[in-house]
Image (cartoon, rainbow, N blue to C red; front, side):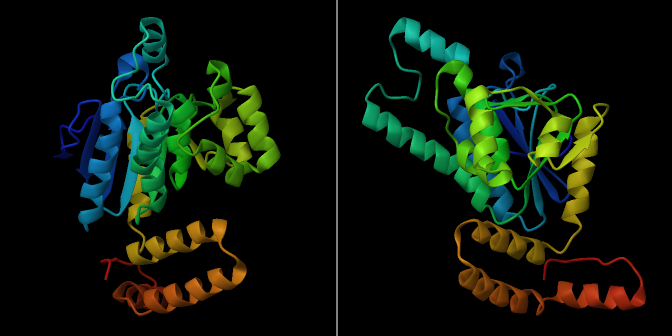
Length: 282
């Protein structure tokens, strides 16, 4: 999938591409020679793309994917090894531990936290492997769709690291504490079908023309009432950390708000008239 045929967003780097396709904003990890492993430039690029999509009322869904058959291999292990053998910190990283912690926290804010808090639905479309921090970023999305050939692996245990970008938090909420610990400690390679059985992946699509099929899936989601979907995301995110009373109070506020919209009136009318609705986001 390329971004040459649509409105391109300036992300500041060719390592991460972004474009608008109708009502879908598309972000593409673009380092296929390293299986789309993360680079320093990608983090700011994600922030730039999300900012552009947030301000574009035509964009109702964001899809994050990877170029040329992989989603994202996570951290650049080759680059890590070069840093260790040279004795120099990786570009953009400090050799002072406390400074390095603050740098990583900032990257978390730019990526996983920003995706989780983004007002519109975010879908991770996995054409192939999602590993390590790449999987963590996919888990930060609201939904995940995967090609049949996709492989999902936490990977951190394989490189002697504990994990970052929120994977431990997101995975625990998806599959429960014991299963998340198993997946982190033993790092099995899950097929897309196995990940779907665990609830990590929402939909598995055929390998052939996966990119276009995933985009069509997101286009279908973008046809739904955008204000209602945004408030649903608020409610569901809040449910992870709030108590019932707080959740009920917020649900009441959002329900009254959404039922006052033109989109709600359109939906009610189409239900009676037995026709398909056209939602305007008003």
